[in-house]
Length: 137
Image (cartoon, rainbow, N blue to C red; front, side, top):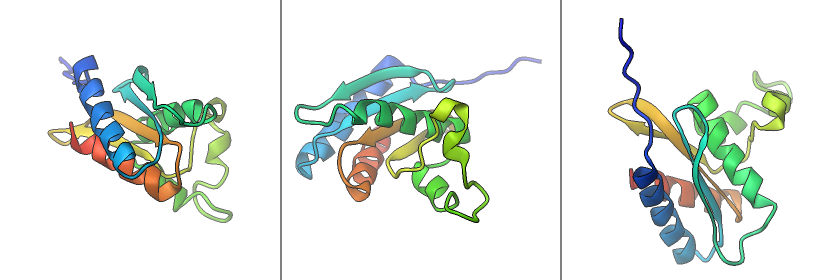
């Protein structure tokens, strides 16, 4: 049996990041934007001028989370509060799981091939940047 798994390429990641940067500039939200491959490994990252240093790791971990669980971090957050099924998940995977809005799986032909994470603004701003970035794939 042969498995054929596709993964995001560097060219794809750069295109995704450029679209995220354009959206971040449009909404005036300097952002960190990260793209991971199908294995959850960092392919590319950018920190826009003025973006928070603390958001570097957050953007990378949002992308990791979206790929590791194949759901948006917004959907994860909706089920990660006290009493919810994923409460405490943020402590798993060495603390890499982020339940902040702004991480989105990247899909091609229905298959997750990576993910993008954006951080630096409000949850709604991070979501807008990540969704615009993902749409460029």
